[in-house]
Length: 176
Image 1 (cartoon, rainbow, N blue to C red):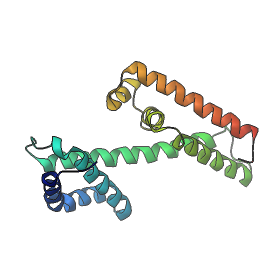
Image 2: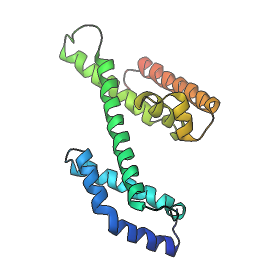
Image 3: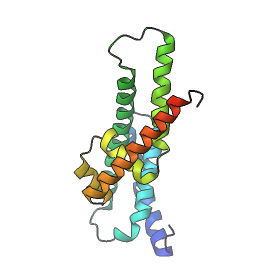
């Protein structure tokens, strides 16, 4: 996406005025993790660049940036929490892990699941991420993705089919 000269000037002025405030907010939400806060801050300003032409009517660009920063931080924190929950669920077998080998196997399965999800096409990965990792209802996910519930349902079904196929393939070939 390319900005016009005027949009570029607007973006630069907004960036200079608000970058420290957004970064400090992200640092607080990330409990002082500088790298994480830098990543979230960058995401906020990428969204600004994508929406510069649409934002001229806002009374408070600072308020918009704050809301985008908070939402981005919360989404990332939820996603990280969901991955931890998935790993814990995969590790929970109803009995204590009996051997170090079992623990390593569970970690590998969790990594394989993450890799499989990351390998899905973006439109399918978004559905899985929203519905399973962020606990959105299908109605909420459809609204966020700006698609119908029927289209979301089709994508959800297709994503699960692909994940099952990948899982059965890796079970058939333990060397992968």
